[in-house]
Image (cartoon, rainbow, N blue to C red):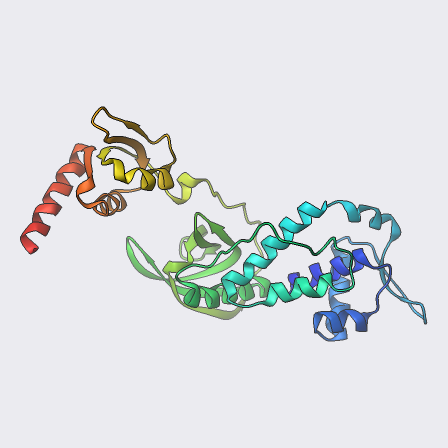
Length: 300
């Protein structure tokens, strides 16, 4: 990807006084013309890159800018590298790992060393997720519209969007895009997107607001839940809601109180505990669960 390559060029220039375009082209496995275009883009972005002709010429960053090369400590750079490497777990490739190897070759140990943080962003849906992410990134980079079928609680619909951001949040991947049907920005969950197609139509980038990523926006609450759980369920409650979501009763059971997402998710979650959970409130959902269990009893 273009941005990955440009980050690579910057990293090399910050480590070496002067390099040549053929050297960069060989390290990053692209043509010299591509390197020249990337250098022009970096200059337009405000990076003070200079080129010199002749035997001792080449590409370099101005000395005044190089004083900032220690902006990141070794620990901070290791965290950046861990984040970059984590993208390989999504794509199922070693593209980013190889990129970091290229950047660390012939450099100080600032870019290498033992990694103490390993991030795996893959999921059970890696095989279907990776091509979706690749298509969406391509559409974002090239400024092209995306078309796909989207599945939501209201049903399925065909969507055409202008893509802006890929977001990993709360164990899931999302697309932040301008929806042409809704005429507004929307957050789309990648697992609900199918038949993704990059269109030939290019779009003029809008002033995109930063997407709202608070937990209650992605997983809206609003249902005050009170339930009793058997002691054996403690680990699941702590894993999902933390250690302060319940109080231990005299008989050892756990009185759970929290806001939950929506009714259907709540019922499904409680049924996963089988006979080790009993919903106390809200009463209307308790009655609905009772009717559901009775219907299940007749089925079995």
